Image 1 (tube, helix red, strand yellow):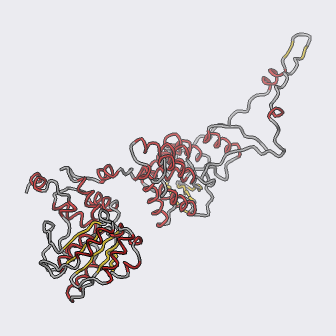
Image 2: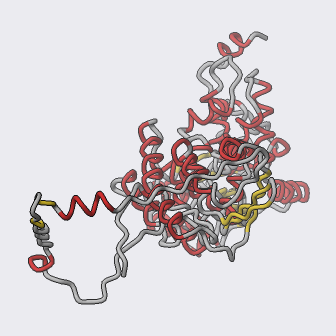
Length: 506
């Protein structure tokens, strides 16, 4: 059948309704419940009241309807309306009057089936008075009545109600079965979608079959092949590379780059709540696989704060401040500050007074300015000429600041990562040791390693083997200064990295 004919015949029917299970054998992901119910039906051990609890969209109502039909030996189709199967939405019928009406009618015998089955959905919405009225019926129900209660918030049910039911706890859908279920529906609907896109739909369905199928229905209207990028656009999910860069700049204390990256995501239309969820998910994964980009205590504190972003009055600003709060002193670049031994001097006293110009020295022939004379007589120290490098020279400590400066000009994020490493130089080889496994992981990415290799080859004149290691005991080196650098070269490096400045001796 052509796709246009399929769409025409099924127009107006949502996929989650079209593919709703019609028998216990069609239920996916709740095998522990299906097995127990099948056994009870086979042996004739029916309870007068069942309680189905669990998250939304995992099959509670579907199984309740199937069970109601199985109890009465009836075939289940959604179009059937059996008089002996009564569904009540507690969200709309939550008062005591509705439950009193139910109590009066339960004594009426079933018309066609063996049992009269009452399905009460979202039962936790009943009022306290309604619960008290329902409790009377549950305590002494007629032999021909079966109650099936369903709720997503079992903690709101009185203990007296729960104790008089046979409870079944539904679990969220697992990723594997959920993806397989989506793939089967996509195949039947002739929806061309990649496996990666299906996995992302399942992930953001939050364990709900109904929500995941609803997302597939939403994106499956076109004929083109659906990629993971299409799903990201549908869900408003930022690209993984952008989230990784945001975490990377935060972990190395690149404050301005982090703020700029966050603002760029906002300008592209990504919502703060979604960004916070993605950052939190990435941080959790890094902690579990042993590559946290931040100290564990800082990471856990940050993850907790990210959960508050969606409920904030200003989510965008709250997210920005939350990320800034994770910039610990250890991650921030070191700065040079003056050391003052004495007490602060009031501003009026501390103001510098201009020094008097030196008096000119009069001679018989002319008047000579001593300042100009001294400047002329004392030559400025010449900068040491760089030693000419021979072909095949290896990378060394003297050239390392040049590598950092070159990265800073073109690849600011990568520069922020590399400068945190402790470099060790050997013949045709450089070993970079990081104190955070996250930094080592980022630099080991093919793209980043290639960029660094190209920069080193340009400066050193030959390709160099780059080895990235992780050692939590290594102290981060945010200025990229090697231990054997002379003091004057270290100061030049600081000046070039931070854009110049005045060094004040203590």
